[in-house]
Each structure stands twice: as C-alpha cells, then as structure tokens.
Length: 236
Image 1 (cartoon, rainbow, N blue to C red):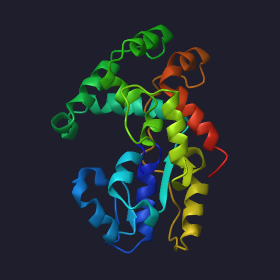
Image 2 (image 1 turned 135 degrees about the vertical axis):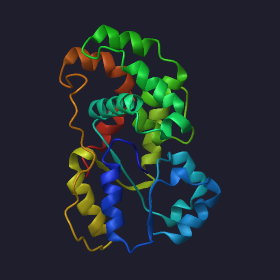
Image 3 (image 1 turned 180 degrees about the horizontal axis):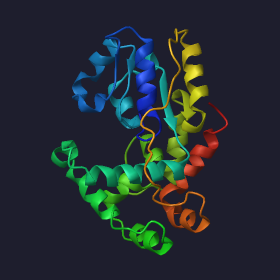
C-alpha cells in the first residue's frame, strides 16, 4: 500500500530490483480494478495508491503479505503541501490538469497562503470544503480505512488501528533503512545495492516544522495521523 510522500517511490524502486523482471508492478491504481485478481496471480510484488478498503475488495489478503510505510505527520503534510503547490505551478506536467484538475485548483489556492502566519493557516483550515479535506485531512489514516469519509473522526482512528493488523509490516520513513532490511530478510531476497531514498525535495520549506504556533495551527490536519504514527513508531 503506497501512501504518497512516505518514501514509497524509493521502496518501489528498491523492491522491484529484488524480483525477476516481469514479476513486480507498481502504480496499479492506474489499472482497471477488474484486473486486480489477475495481477495477484501473476506478480510477486504489487504496489499502488490504494486504501485498505480496495485491497479487501479485490485481493485475497490471506494469500498476501501487506506492507506500507508511514511518515511523521507534520513532515508528511509539509511534503504533500509542497507537492500540490509545485504540481499546480508546473507547465510541463499536464497529467493532473487533464485527469484530476481538482489537484491543480487546490495547489493554486494553497499557493496564496502565507504559511509562516498561523492565522492564515487557521482561516484556511476552518473554511476547507470536503474536496480540500480529502487531500489534506489526516491523509495517512485515510489509507487504512474501509470507507473514505468526508471528514475523519476518532471512530476512523479505531478502524484504522484494527486494519493495521492486516499488515505484516508497517515501516516509517524515518526508519526506512530498517524497514527495507527487514523486508529483504523476511523473504530471503538477495539485495544487490543500497536502498537509497529518491525524490527528496531541495525546495525552500513552506514553514518551520518546529515552530509551536505553526504546529498548533496545522494540528487539526494531523491529529489522528499523529496518534496512528505514535502507536507504530516503535517498529521498523
């Protein structure tokens, strides 16, 4: 289960290098769901931006080992916000303009916010519509749910924790090397290189991750993600 902005692309690249050519596939969210049972019969490694509910519906999970990576929620939100703004401002990447223009609209709206000003953040968050919330409200927790709600609540946290038990391993971005090492060892795979992190941004930060006022303003967007993350951070 590939949660965006968690080092999932890095792990896909690494994991695909461990299996024979033609035995692994990524980004299956771009493939028609009716083909998913066939994919499970064909490939040893399968990855996609798919929540648990979709995995339950289309895959025989008793015949699969589920893996995912989550990230410290404030850092994850920061990375996601930068991606939305960058994608909206890019003239070269036309994929989302044609296939998911809501991402462009949200990125353009985010670009107008003064992220160093807590009151600006609080005002935007208080006025978010359901579509904006779908992209920003406790994004990681949403991946662990059977049904994606308009807004997340504490009942969703309970369900997410329950669904965590479906996974053989849930790693963290902050302990990425340990996660990859455990994956390799668990499946007796032969590692041919060091699992480097890819797609690491060199852009100027939108805000100071350590500023208490900024963290407090953004807290509603990560409150449940934090509880989920803190319960898992003791493991690779």
